[in-house]
Length: 325
Image (cartoon, rainbow, N blue to C red; front, top):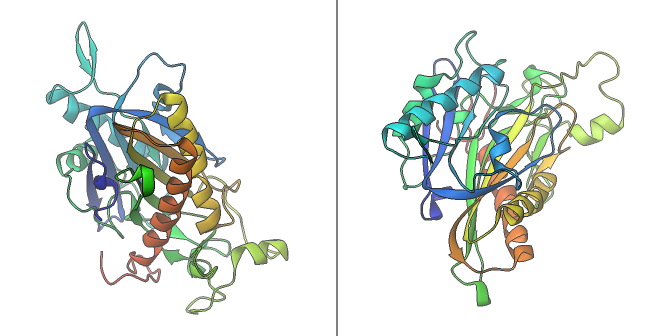
């Protein structure tokens, strides 16, 4: 499996400024994709999400831009629009095409070089790099400066990054696929749903390989004595795509159901300190029960989140589980 590009019509590209520890990831759907969105976090930074609303006049979008840099990184989506416009891809108007490219950002400023934000040039570079090949994971694109487990500060956090996974349905739905891509920069820990064990997260002490267990620590009131909780400095961004044909209402429901993957793989999920958002894309005409698609989406997203932790290499003074990146 290649990850999100297992869905025909999707291209994925990364652009990374490794020395600055920031970057962006672009998902292109040049033939157009029906989209939906579900926002569960409380500190989301985004642009053009309204085009995904079921009551919006446009039917399809042409790309998605995920970037680091906090609100500064929203500029990267403009580079993707410029790239697509030169190719003649976009919503047709009297004056020419207007590419519809929703964008979302995560806060990587604690690891990134000061002032080194993803910009139009980086967004365009990621779009140019987009291919239908296997999606690179770990310390790439929007995951270049991502981290997890920040209850006790960055000294006890761990590196995370980009992960992707695909679930293929069977029986009467054979050939239907749901894929997910996640840029994981969570306040909480990443947990393997198969074992219930923490994969990456807040450590018991700086330099320790033992996990503190963020959820358990919070329930003991661990942050009440000095550990600062910073709202808006964490976010996991996810894109879920399928080759089943969906309406905008159905794509929105797929995004909502796929969000169960957050609850399985991030502990705690959807806090006041995260800007978590999931976008769903439909490309294709295959028929499938929406509940089955949602179940597959949740599984794919949980796996993508776990892979984002397992594939991320050490960087910026944070330990990582991956061998490179």
